[in-house]
Length: 358
Image (cartoon, rainbow, N blue to C red; front, side):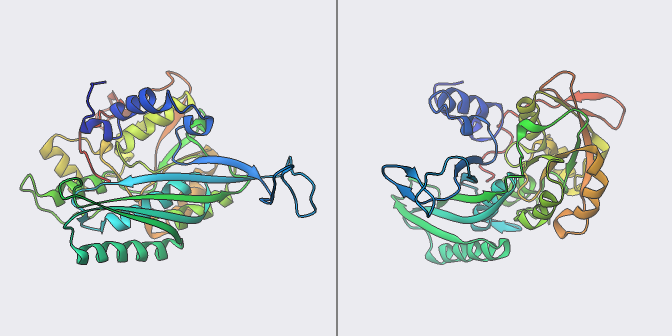
């Protein structure tokens, strides 16, 4: 790791992982944090009345020791450039990103907070559009924004606008999801095409003289995934949204967390022709491009067909497909069988492919 922070440290790949481990996890050694999931689960007493001498107590006054509730909490910051892009904007992204992180842990979302850092000189009309988009997306997701904060910094001290969102949710005691729970024999499913958001942002920047009709996939996934989580408790092991670093980096994280290997079939991974074309032209790999409206599902093989049938009934899951399996040999390895019958390793991304995509 270099002495100075680079853009690669924010790209979601190996450089990000090294930064988190060296700087943050080494100093913040809390078990919930060190799991490295999209949200952390905090167990709290089931009754929240508090007595200074007895601690948490029930309405009758007796201390509570065994009954607990499970609360999911997550936070995310959004610095995407440009702030408006085909298919969405930073306001929609801020809601979807946090809703999806909570959903990946099976949480029933209780509320979100938002924090805005705005550069001096930013257009009020643009700010109104962003906040309206944020509000509309919250309605779409069925969630509430319950608190917020606004700061303005000197011109040049920020690039227009940044947003931070934090979310909390309640997790059913029967639901246990996490990157550490994948098992050999499990199936790997994606809910749709890979790389749409990253490719759309690349086009929106207009730096390479390429034009296209591709839109970001940014969307809240709670309505898609909640029925599946409730129907198959214990059989869905892992849910992840492959944002920064894309499919390949996210699967590497899961393989490391669960000490398993993951083997994919390239021809089964859905990628739009427009995304394939952009990647071929620029020498990029669609498996490392960000997604903001897709999920990776790792589940028991016995429910794979039922899961796909339900996914295909929702607009956000029509292209869902099984793309691979989990194995026990070579823990931490992610590989893909190519269309030519060969096999290539998919390492953790470097983080340098496309910075500031979310």
